[in-house]
Length: 191
Length: 195
Image 1: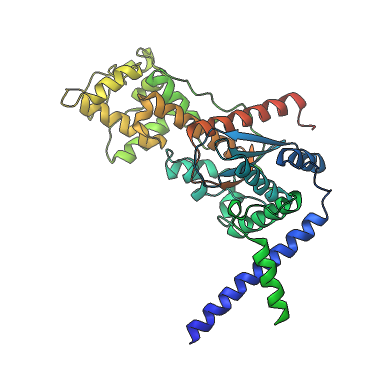
Image 2 (image 1 turned 90 degrees about the horizontal axis):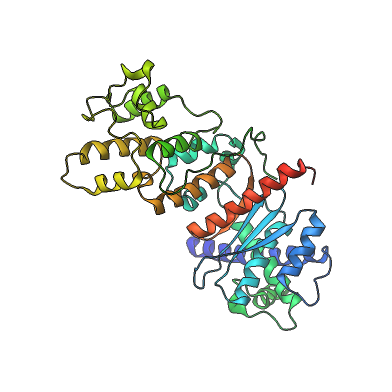
């Protein structure tokens, strides 16, 4: 029984944190300038870049990763580089761009750690990576991959797409379903 | 934003490109794999570390110098340039060998030179932290060159932070990102960083 109750609490906790994320994403978006009309992720990236005083470059990568949402954000010295899969469908490309832009809008700090570098640099030894990282001790001390950031970015991206579209976004392009979440939120506050 | 290290003193080392000799590749790796590329390890340090790594004395300082510079004759070093008995070949054996010759010898299973060659390339590869194929396979070498450039940009703070939603990056993707880092470095150089 105790285990069962704990699991229920965990599930409730997760649902609550998602609705919290939704509320927070709505607040974030309300503080930002209106979305460009007609809306494209490229036009939005340009507007956000102007707002932040740092240009955002959108770079299509010659990757081919089928249906997986693959995207990357690299903060360089004088600009932000948002990469997306050039072979993804146009709709998925928009979703990838919005997700990576949302990292910027949420003020995320990103992650550079040894585990991530070993995925990106599989042909370099762990010793070599550690030696080169010695010049960035702050990076070494950072906690690793932050799944909370990913969820927050996906939430904001989904919300932007929803507000930008005349019709609600196709649920299968996003990992989150805002309609279900709002229903859960309402039910949660009624009970 | 992420705290970044002090600005670099010089441009990052340039990979020697396809078809480079063993000496050119070693010289590049000596800088590119150093914690600070402007302070590469001395040949003495290299030899000492490779001998520790091998657990026995397999390579001398003068021979490490020969391999790295491609020079066979140095009057001050000639009398010292004894390749360690471990490799059991003529001192000039590996010096200035091009990738084709290395590849042929590497694949020449049963040939007389296979064992010392493999031992030497494995020793160097382990020391630098890359695959031994770096020394004779252009495709492997160009992928590793891109990885080293990317790692240098991390180390120097030119990449401040990353959010990555993918299992990894293809060689082509890595080259595209490195090109953007190069472009940002050129802009910083031109503007004096006042943008």
